[in-house]
Amino acid sequence: MCAAETSRAYLEVEHLVKWFGNDRAVDDISFGIPEGSFLTLLGPSGCGKTTTLMSIAGLHSIDSGRIRVGDTVFTSPKEGLFLPPEKRDIGMVFQSYAIWPHMTVAQNVAYPLEIRNVEKSEIDDRVAEVLKLVGLTDWADSLATNLSGGQQQRASVARAIVSNPRLLLFDEPLSNLDLKLREIMRVELKRIQSEVGITAIYVTHDQSEALVMSDEIIVMSKGKIEQRGGPVEIYSQPVNEYVSNFIGVANLLKGKVIDASDGHGNVEVTQNGHAITVPCRIGPGISAGDEAVLSVRPENVHAEREGSANANVEGEVTHAIFLGSYVDCRVQWGDFEWKVIAHPRTRLRAGEKVYLHFDPQHTLAVQP
Ligand code: ATP
Image (cartoon, rainbow, N blue to C red; front, side, top):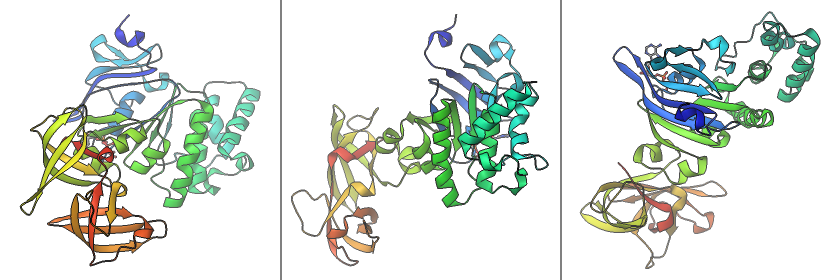
């Protein structure tokens, strides 16, 4: 028995490589996830997330690597194994709803069971059950084309899960919906997945979808994994400039690590000839003397109108927009403009001098 079978992962992707001509679309990526978890592959267009998903579905052959789900090896070119997609027992939900317009909602949802020759009474029970789960019971007998976009996507989720597949794969399923509906549907999809307890892989370039829905996120770039972790970890402890920039908003400044021990240290940053030393957390793989990028989220910059011993930077407010629960500010410091989320009580105004302080616990030195 190989190592993959003895590990606890339910889905295991090992050293997956996929070429398209001269383009290495997926470049030796490995990950495993436990049964019932929700993993998101997140990254910009062209980073290889869809190719990874399609490789798991069997809609692409792969050049090398191995994919296993449970005790079944889906594909392993080295062992000469390739399970055709229809034998992988996977449910898929795409951006286009792929709902048949000439059928009712119930007929659409029943289809995967009909082609498996499941008994009629069992089909009726199961269809009623999943339509209830996705909130479409009252629409069972309507033509699928009479549904709204959000409802059609619910119907395609019902169809994808009706046969209790081993895995549920989502490829940007909410991209066709307007913002308000996307916000509702991402919570709904997560609820449905966790109620069913199905293992899900979700592909998106939308970081807020990834943060809201996922147990774990894999951030990809150029066919490789940049970082894997839970939403809080990815947001609050990005390992490099790419992840800091891709997830949320961050102030990013190049600097040099002066000292580092036990994950803490100091980074020197120079602006217009003025060097400041900022105490911070030092990310993995970074040592004293290294070039690094200082990463500070706007909500972790404390803006004060009076100077104090704590202040790291003295700058000028260039804009301050009051938004009720916070003030969205920009603070000019040499050539660099800090993004700052200030407390409304600070009452900052454009043109004022301001002092910025960075809490060392929430200031990170990350890899460039
Ligand atoms: P998107 O969100 O735009 O789909 P993605 O991150 O999912 O982006 P992939 O679709 O996996 O990225 O594409 C990865 C790379 O592989 C890209 O350079 C893309 O042009 C290339 N690619 C993907 N599918 C094919 C294909 N069928 N034939 C040729 N090249 C492809």
